[in-house]
Every structure is written in C-alpha cells, then in structure tokens.
Length: 93
Length: 368
Image 1 (cartoon, each protein chain N blue to C red):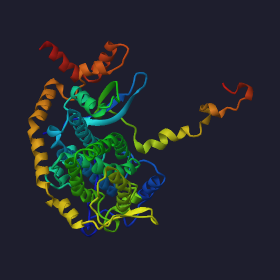
Image 2: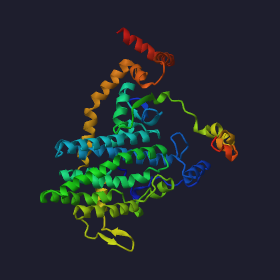
Image 3: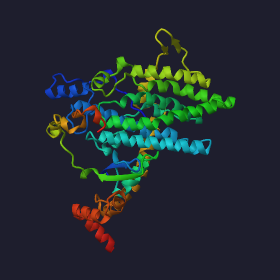
Image 4: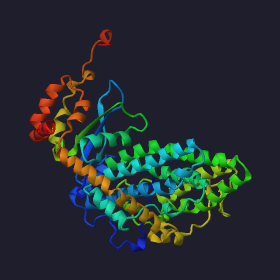
C-alpha cells in the first residue's frame, strides 16, 4: 500500500498568538490530518486552532545558502534600537 | 518510552566508528557539534551520524509502540474507572510518542513503511523490558514508577541531543512522560497502604521488575559499542553506567518510602562515593531477551503484526476515500475552517488558482 502523504501541523496555542509548527504526521487527506493532529498534539489543551499543510507544498531555503541569505544582516546593527545612544533625558524613547 | 543501547562490542564488526581520515566536511561538522549547534534535517552530516540516528530513533519509536502492549493488557481490568481512564490516557501518550519519533526518523530519509517492516520482520530491536509479562495490577504500578522512571532518566539528556528533530521530540515526550511515573508510584502507594495481600502484590511486582529495569540502561560502558562516537556527536550525552547509577540512587529512597524491599542483597549506601552500591547484573539474561528469547518476545511481535494487519482495511478505506475526493488536494472544508483569512472568498480563489485540479474535483463533487 502506498504510504499516506505527509502533513505539517501548526497549532495556535491560544487566541492572540501565531500558529506554530509542532510536528508532522501521515494522513490519507487533510481532513483526517486535522483529526489526527487533534488527537496527537492537543490532548492537554495545547491548542485552540490547527493548521495542516501538505509537506510537499512547503518551499524551503537551501541550508547551503545560509551564509548568503543571512550573514549580510550581521553588520547592520543600526537596525536595532540599541545602536543609538541618546541623552539620559530621553532614555525611554 | 525508551531507547536502549543493544549493540555488543564483539558483534560490532560493521559498527560505525570515527572515520579514519577526516574530510574537511567531517571536521566542519564536528566543529558545529562542539559549538553546541543543532543539526537540522537538510544540513550536511556524515553518513554514519545519520545511520546511528536512524537506528536509535527508530528503535526508540518501536519501543513506544510495543510498550503499549503490556499496559494495554490491563485497560479492561483496571480496578476503578479512574484508574482505567488514567491508563487509557497513558497508553495513548505512548502511541503519540511513537509517532513523534517515527516522524523525527523520517526527516533522515527513512520511510515509515521501512521502519514498520523492520520491526515486524524482527530486524529492528525495541527495548527488552517490554518482553516481560504484566501478571498483576501491581505490574502496571511498577511500569509507571520504574520503567517510565528509567525512561525519563535516559530521555532528559536526549532533549539536548545534537539532532534538532530528535531533541524536539524528546522535549515533548519528557513533558508528557512525567505524569506516567507519578501515576505508577500512586498505584504502588495505594497498594502499599492497603491490605497485606495488596502489599504482597506490590513486593512481588518489584521483585520481578527490578533487574529487568536495571538492565534497561544497556550494557556496561566497557561493553558498549557506540558510546564513544555517540558521545562525540552528542547523540548520547550520559553513559549507560552513569544513568544506571543515577536511577538506582533516586529509586532506593522511593522504595523505602513504600516500605518495599529491593531484591538485591548487595545493595548498600556508600557514603564515601555518595552512591548506592549494587549487585551484579545478569547480562546473559539481558542478551537473551534482546536477541529474541525473552518471556514474551514472540507474543509481543505477533500482537503487533496482528494489530497492523487487522487495521489494514481501515487504512485502505481511508486511502480509497481520499483518492475519490482528490488525493493530495487541499480539503476545502478543512481549509475554510483552518484559515483565519479576512475574506473567505479571496482565500478560496487564491487556493483554486494554486491547484486547478483540486478545484476541478470540488466542482465535480458539487455536481454529483
């Protein structure tokens, strides 16, 4: 028998927070995947909402491009508020 | 529930060892490990690292799944409704733990079917502890208290294992597992505070489980094949003997509190070392059980295969149903409820254009 396709599971732990990736599972279709995700990942009220995404639909960056993608940000510290020294009088800006 | 080192040094002709000549990739990889970086699925890794992980994680997964059997034996006979509900929840957890671990192993390129096949054919191993029978209700107490206690001892260091998906699975498992040990001790407490017959039941179970549990940590470090390389790769962070000692040190006072006697005449506190000394482990028994000749090896595997075969028609029906509805397409109902888009129509159009086939299936379904 063909293996069921793989789905990635995302759970919103409570209203106001993002859905977060929690794991993956095999299921015959998306509807069953939601049911199974509920049984596997929310047995202790870990979630209020579930997203299911076919793993094959995810397009990921190449780990070999990690340096090219992310290193250029390393010397752009002026993007952080801590880069700017302000007089004490405006300390809480 | 547990991963158990089961490879004997003298049998390890093909064992993975540190490569004789380190390639630049190997060196860079080791550098990442030494810097406590996590390795993720698509990162470069030595083949032997991958192979070691697949073996360990899949064995661990098999142990969770087979581990449901000894406890499942008592679900229908739990003494109260409360105990039954608790045991059901615990066994369900073990199934979930198996799933987390299979999923972690799959990130290394091995398929679920391959792993299941390896278990069912007897090629893959699982923890020796599950080949012992659960004869009385007190055995369920001992499994929670001792077997899960030993498992937690082993699994906590694995939460910092160098392979990201395995470490994340272990964090989830450990979080859920802590209730398992406590419910087991709770059963033992109830028995030990009960009638003399109940207390005898508890002692009898401890007598039978103690040594198999002590063996769960695997062979002594001096006889363990993979320890050195696994330690260098930070797959195994604490040695078998250290874990065993830690477990015994923690457990003896718990047995004292229950008023039970641990079946080891040589067990005594060594104040100088700050540890308990304990008697010799019967490693012959360990290898016998690991290699298939324990009290219940054949029954456990047969039960596992039967469950898989009995469930085949359900899996096939679900597959056929999914195929009929348009396999692989996004389920429109699920999508509608799952998305938190502002405008469901926009979302629908967006998805339809993404997958025209799915849209077609849905359209034909509506007509029918």
